[in-house]
Image (cartoon, rainbow, N blue to C red; front, side, top):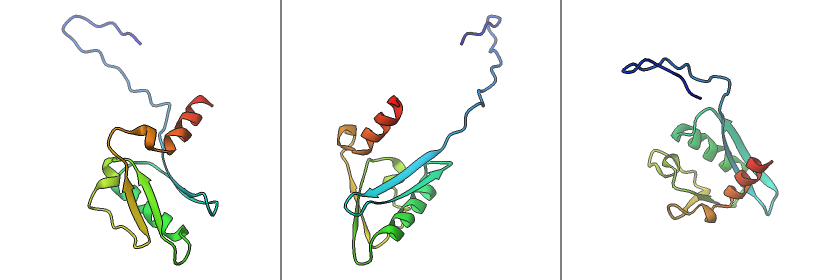
Length: 111
């Protein structure tokens, strides 16, 4: 979008507020057909902590979950309290092709 303004001035441009955002946190266990997911207003450490707690509740008694994560700041912070039944596996930096959830996002974008 273009907007004209007198030389040497900054035009006032209202922000587009027609849309709201949500961040989807999700995990699945293909072997059991069980998943855990949250829609959160922010992608940050408190949201990730809630997600880990939700996953921990869904893990079968006596089992252990391994989560494959990219290196987003809220995945790697030392401020997370990791439940005893979860282990984090961090993917190498800049390798979206190794992240299985990228296939989901690609599908959602095209449909």
